[in-house]
Every structure is written in structure tokens, then in C-alpha cells.
Amino acid sequence: DFHKAWCGSIDKANGLYNLIVANIIADVILILEKDIKNHLEDNAILILSGILDKYSTRIKEKFQDLELIDEMQINEWCSFVYKNNK
Image 1: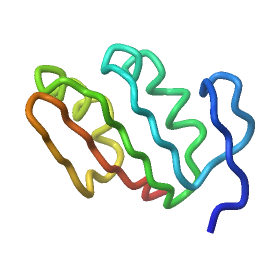
Image 2 (image 1 turned 90 degrees about the horizontal axis):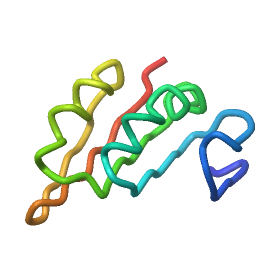
Image 3 (image 1 turned 180 degrees about the vertical axis):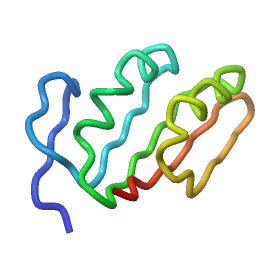
């Protein structure tokens, strides 16, 4: 169930969310990593996409404190689905 929704920059979001989707390049995801994590509710889902495969290892390292529950790759583009097990 969605209780609230926000579409926009994570640095302007208020509160915690049970689903966050970021379809942006890896460099931006890496810069916003702490902000993204700080807005995740307990047991929330995080979907990261728009990531070139050459950056996938860096993304996985930065988000290793979350549970990686799925990953997909189409051509050179990767997506990762994480769960915040807090």
C-alpha cells in the first residue's frame, strides 16, 4: 500500500517512503546514496535503474548494506532491486 508519493529530487523529499525508484545515471545515484537510504522506511523497496554495466560493481558496493533481491541487465543497462531490512 502506498501512503504517500513524491516525484522529484530526493533532497527535497520529506519523510520516509516504502518504495523509492531512481532511474538516473550511476554517478548521480552514488552522490545521492546517503539521501536515498535516509528516506527508506523499514522493509522498503529500492529500485535503481539506468546504470551502465561498467558501474554495476560500484553501485553494489555502495548499497551492500541493503539486501539485493533482484538484478536485471538488458544490453549494457542494469537495474537493481533492494530491500531495506531494518
